[in-house]
Structures are given as structure tokens and as C-alpha cells.
Image (cartoon, chains in turn red, orange):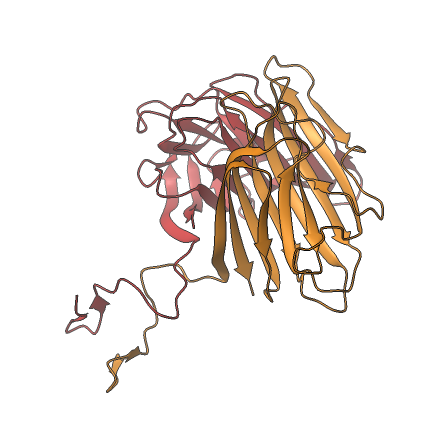
Length: 202
Length: 198
């Protein structure tokens, strides 16, 4: 197929570049919140990719002291209620160097369809936000449970504030294919922030 | 900037194209099928990142592990010192805990390095381990070779295990190959993707 050379100097129908690697990661979708009740990715999660990486960039809530959470769907986003078993532990440190904490804390789930906390006590101060990433492995499998691993960092909305790194991992305990994922605050809207979804494949 | 169309039909001055370039380049992948081990040759990338997708053991209670070679895969016996910890939680809501994993660390040992943690992977049909491993600058002739990994797996007692391992291969010889295997039995199924980062 020949190159199409448009008047605006763009080109299309380019299927490969000799010097461009064919592998991933591939940016599949970007969603930017603006007073959004949730951010959902309901397309692009399929067997094309072996794994998906989500990047959370400056997620800022509309309501103070809420959690940033996610859930998954096996029916294209009609229901976000996949059974999950998960683990959780934070490491945090006070801004005034007064205290630090490290250890298991029960932001986990045990065979629950609830939304999974990825970060807690997210504040609404102008500069407060949570950022991080999560990898979801082989969501389209119809054989295996669906592993995920997430790390976020957050400004805890308490006085004095803490920096908190939260480690969450677990599995969607289903052999049905996951085909949609939703992120939302435990209460109120996502005031601002960006979530990028990348696909990982050979 | 306008496109420049050269005589040899190449196109220059393209500032964006509809694929992600990034710095992470796919190099190779391997899919296990009752495989005793999976090996990769390494080159000169500053960093290698491996994605492990649903590593499923043939034997119930296996550990997924790796070792390194400095002689093109003839021997996998590089000396390593490492640390390991895991966090677990049962499907029944019990056993939520964060633990140093003394059964998964190494001290100047040539043994294989467990990276799924010592709590072992079940081999129920839907059970597996998935995660990532990053190996830094394996071709260096100056420095030891650091690695960090994070895995999630279904423990054979129906617990979710998130295992963390970090350490270094204590050699200044270039690492030429890496091998993955189970502690016992085969890798019944699973896929490993290797990326290079410069």
C-alpha cells in the first residue's frame, strides 16, 4: 500500500518503520478526569496484549480524605464486581519527620467484589494527589486467575501530612475474561488527573 | 515542519507516528509447554525487563526461580546476595501478614534465586504466578549486577502472595544468559517477555 500524502503534510497507511521496534509498550488509551464520577476503560482490554500497565498521574479528588479504588468487569462494563483476594502494606513518613510506619494493614480483600483501595486518605489541597502504576496480567485468560500489582504514592490528608507508598497486589479470582476496568474515588468525583493504559505484548 | 520527501522515497522530519516508541524495546518471548527451563541470551542493553505471565508449575508447591551465566549458558552459577520479603492474605480472610522471607534470600550463593517467594505456587488449573524482573546493566565489566522483582502468585493454600526480591550478582564479569525454571518439575505453561531499555 503506498503512502498517502495529504495536503496537511500528515501521512497515513504506514504499517511499519524499519527502525521502529514492533514490540510494546503501546499507549492504548488516555483518560483525563474533570469532575468525573469514574474513569472506565471498556475497550482495548482483550487477548491482543499479554499484560496491561496503567499509569496514574496526579489523581486529585473532589472530596477530602477518600480512597482511590478500582474494580474489574467481565461483562464489558455493565457490572464491576469481580471477586478478588488481595494484600496490602504501606510505608509512610511524616512531613515533620515525627513518625513513620511500615507493616501489613488491612486495606485488603478476601473473596470480595468490593472496589480495591489503591491509595487512601487522598486530600483535596491544591497540590494533593496520588500517582502510581498498576500492572494487570493476562486479563483475557479463560484459564487463570487475574494477577495485578500496584504501587502508588500519596499525600495523606492528615495533619501533619505523610508521604505514603502503598503496595497492593492480588488476583481477580475468576477464569472469565476481564474486559473492562474502572477507577473511582470511594466518595465524590475524580476532580482531575490522567490515567494512561498501555498494552504489553511480544 | 513540513515533511521532506527524499529521492529514495524515505520520509524525514516525521515528529510523531501512531505507535509508541519509548525506550523499552521488545526483544524476545518464550512460551512454556512442559518446559524444564526457559533461557534468554542477553546483550548490551543497560537494563532488561522481564514480564512473566501466568507461570504455571507442573508440580504443586513449586518455586519459580532464575540463575545467571557468564559463559554463554554453559553454566548457571553466578554468585548472588539477595533479600526477600512477601505479603500474604488468605481467601478466607486470615493470615494477612508482611514477612521477611529467609527461605528466598541468598548469601554469596550460586544457587538459583527464587523470585515467586518461598510460599509455593499451586498448580490448580487456574493457579499461577505473574510478575516482573528488572536486571540492570548485565554487560558491565565494572559493577555487580543488580536485580529487583515483584511477583503475585496463588499460594497452594489459597492465599494471595506478593513476593519482592532484590539483590545483586556479585561479579564484574558480563552476564551473558539468564535461565528460568521451577524448583522442581517443569514449567507447565506460561509466557515470558523480555524487553531491553537504554
